[in-house]
Image 1 (cartoon, rainbow over the protein chains, first blue to last red):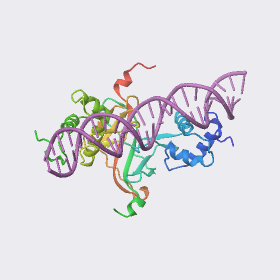
Image 2: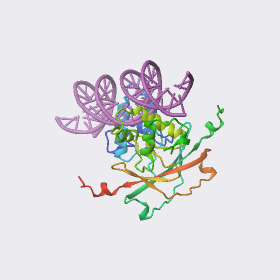
Image 3: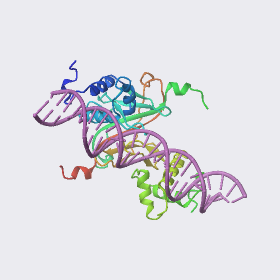
Image 4: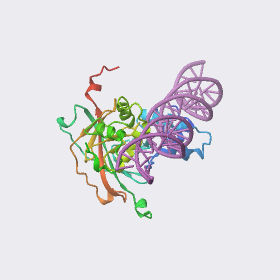
Length: 134
Length: 134
DNA sequence: ATTAATGCAAACACTTTGCAATGGA
DNA sequence: TCCATTGCAAAGTGTTTGCATTAAT
């Protein structure tokens, strides 16, 4: 039960619930998504707690914040390098486990220290494709 | 002077100013950035007009909306395929003109129709690097 | 006992919208 | 003239923060 004992944060029931919800979750939920999912079992949980916890988890490197969805931040508990595929219609995000080794020449870097990269593929998911066209 | 005559939108002074500001602009400005820059010469211009115009330009394919900055939408008048490099500290965005031909196998696409991709490189820009470290 | 985390509400930042007045086409 | 666009204000989202209370260590 002390599965998260070395997390470096106080383990409150709320955090435990958030961690359990995120574990293995590939839906790339927003803070609101997490809040709604947990509100059923934690009716008193505050949305602010979800935001605060996500911030802490980000600081501990247990969660990645994605800016792939233009309307809200989405979170990914998979902190290993990988890429994403987003549906332009419904904003569903799928993981792309394939990685790419992209090199930039010095002259292409605009004098930045380049630390990494992230690829967003975009397209249409199967359910949006098969949905009746207006 | 009818440089934008075939744009398919009514050419108001406000829109002309926005188009002129964006032309060749590589700063990837937010709506607020554009509004501030033009307010000097157009003191009565409304921020809503900037948003409305950007929406129209997006619809006409004259501007791309970027979700590279987690805090706000940024806009790019360069609609040719290219990639971006963002400074993790100051959020400055530079263009990467190099493109990459990234292929996904059918099994990697989670049953999406993949239409394209965009690469975000991230790192530290030269001015942030040389800034005094706290 | 300490100190961090919670929940609430208020504040904040960004973006969108309703609508009367305006002005391009 | 006609209809799209403007400017303003209000409203709508998503996110952050202040603070007294609570609870993990």
